[in-house]
Image 1: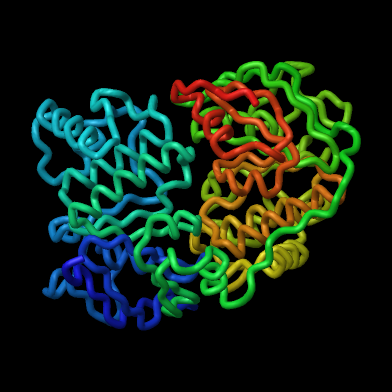
Image 2: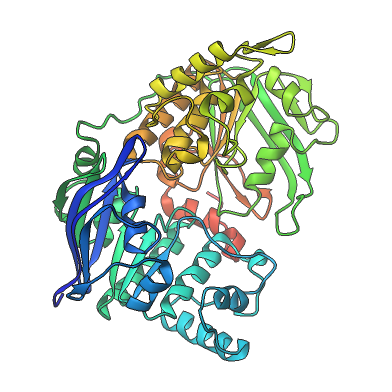
Amino acid sequence: MTGTLLKIVGLTKAYPGVVANDDVSFNIQEGEVHALLGENGAGKSTLVKMIYGLVKPDSGDMAFKGTAYEPSEPQEARARGVAMVFQHFSLFDALNVAENVALGMAEPPKTRELAERIRTVSEQYGLPLDPWRLVGDLSAGERQRVEIIRCLLQDPKLLIMDEPTSVLTPQEVEILFATLRKLKSEGTSILYISHKLEEIRALCDEATILRLGKKVGTCTPREVTAAQMAEMMVGNELHRPEREPTTPGDVRLALKDLSVASPSQFGTSLKNITLEVRAGEVLGLAGVAGNGQDELLAALSGEITNAPGMVVLDGTEIGAKGPGPRRRMGLLTGPEERLGHAAAPNMTLTENALLTGAEREGLMSNGFLKWGKAKSFAEAIIDRFDVRTPGTETVARALSGGNLQKFVIGREVMQRPEVLVVNQPTWGVDAAAAATIRQAILDLAAGGTAVIVISQDLDELMEVSDNFAALNEGRLSEIKPAKGLTMEEIGLMMGGAHGMEVAHV
């Protein structure tokens, strides 16, 4: 490291009812991988948006390579050498890789010339990409490569990465880390945001910790434990989820040769999925994104109806029933897409609590809505799951991603389901919030609920699951006891969609 690349002094940004960043100061050195850590709502997203020119600070200063840095828009930040890979991909499925990359360039070269540059740079950094492939046909890991290559073509001096491994297998994480270490060796600085603290320890040189908008400390990740970093983030001791020993009961949910055509041209159809989940059991389902997880949840929620005999709940065939009847019978679901699917963005938290809780929580009677009771239900969710929000009348889109996740998962958990199916229950939430959600799942199972957890977080699945399987191209692997499986074995099962040999263990 040869000097300071980005100097941040006293950055402050306030919104109505909340101070997102409060007098934040720290430096990023040249050739440094710098972690930015904090709970949901700690101010990480606002801070990087100010660095990238998406948000203007109320006060404070930045200097880039010793000169004043005040980007008014991302194009200005990119011109100075700052690039960002967002947590949510901004790609068009119907366009190929080269066309998507061109959309992010102010003056793109001719397509063939750009395609050759993409191929050269992607191979140079160990992230091979075919520039002519449709993005809709790519795996989640390959889509992330498109986003990274789009940034590397700018020859950035600072690369900001927001939760970059949330959609990757362990093998893909190693490839990404090799790429980031190569960039570091060439002098590129990386600002790295992740809730996976062991990754931070393995990759990052320094870490800045935010809490409630303020900088509360720094550390050298390799010199502290993940638990110590988590406790710095939350300000107190972190409690790991605990499970009461239980004996699985009767079969609550059974799938028999479930086959479903994906409603999306770029989706993945389900092929002959058979499984049983018993009362008190947590079944963990792993898989690289795009291997049928969304279709499976839709087939279980009733958004996609099924042929007779394929889905049986507590001995009753429910294939023809839609979401409402299935919810009344006790089959509740939590989809991956929290904003727009799990929650209506422009509706308040009270209204969103009402959307799925109306019948099971008695929030309406004879066609009339009980707004007072709905508000009380929303308040109970906010209180139990520590949702950081000004109040129940805040609209869903105003919450940080992690806080909205806590709300939508809490809303389903508190309705006491007979069967709960959740997709990515702790995606994008901090360590303390993840522990709260996982404990709630384990408590449900201890009370007799059958739970299916679909997740790309292998640590999460190993922590909560009794049994484990993986989805590959819409097919389900053999179900195995979770205890004793190694990460390598699980990673190979998940990576089957990439042509790896699936390990049968």
